[in-house]
Length: 451
Image 1 (cartoon, rainbow, N blue to C red):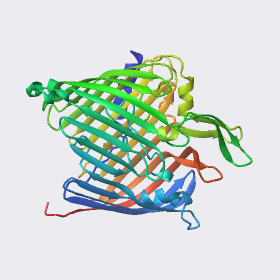
Image 2 (cartoon, rainbow, N blue to C red):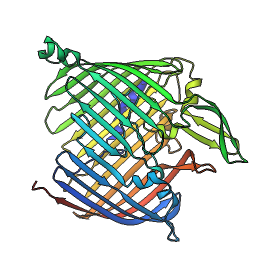
Image 3 (cartoon, rainbow, N blue to C red):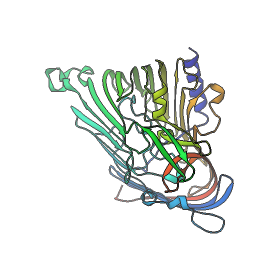
Image 4 (cartoon, rainbow, N blue to C red):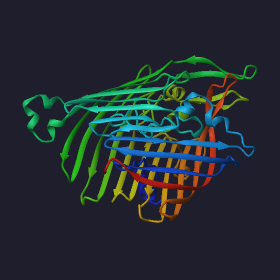
């Protein structure tokens, strides 16, 4: 009961504070955003120039993000364009359709991507660092009777891949005309991480070569899963689905989950979604293994002097006690003006098992203000630990004022991460980075194509 109470408190609080949503221009419209300002990165002043045009036509959309950051001497920051992937990251997204459309394709930064009900991959983010943005691909196609969801996390180097295929078998039979039950769905999922540090469980840092030397490596982390979903209510007022998931981490443990997903549209202008899930976790198993901060959790050197490190694969090896838990989520969209989402999980017996995701956006088109924010926190020990910023946190906030419809004056605060590198310039972890950025930028909407 205490866990459920905490979740409800978090959701109520989230409606006033935190958020992160990707909003696109309407079809046949676009906008050109650009500006300049000073950015404090870990207390050091830098200067930033940004250009971010977006356009949308029919089901297609394109967004670019050219961000140039200079130090006080006028030199371009090395981490801004450190390798080829940094140049590719100028493409923020190229998309066709939207998530849950019959065809959805997105190339670029992948923010909070989920496969199926989320027991294997949930809210995965391929670019939690400004200084190491990645270009990935999502491709989902729903043919009606069957379909698939897929993700490729980053081009140019090995990383996370995932594929879920699903089928609605009753649609092939005489039961296809029966409402609701005809959409009974079965799915199979495979996801893996092929990064060179994905399976590291033992090793040490060599100070002579300035490199981490791997002693024990489990190789790529591979996860397979099975799921079934049964819609019990479907209509313009509400959609409700019951589901069951089973997942197995190859060479480690397995777990399952059962829950309910509901979407409500009672008044036409207010939409709400909710999810409540009970998780049954076996030994050496972590639910939703590929989560929002997985790119940070995968592997990082904690202290070069002592050679200590952490990795998510290493955590799998020490989880030897079954520990079940709860997961809850709530989202609200009111008139397209206010977006709020919050989720929280905690295991029954593990004190530092809390995982929190919060998001909201308040940006009425005609109003002179805006508020955007997003917050993720992992390994939460207790409720006092919820909002402390450390190496388990990711935070984005923007508070802005529009003196004119085409001008925004805002303050942006980011608690994010910057990569740490070895002698060969390979990334061997991340450390927290604080960015404070007063902005003055201009937004010019435009239309085309006769719409």
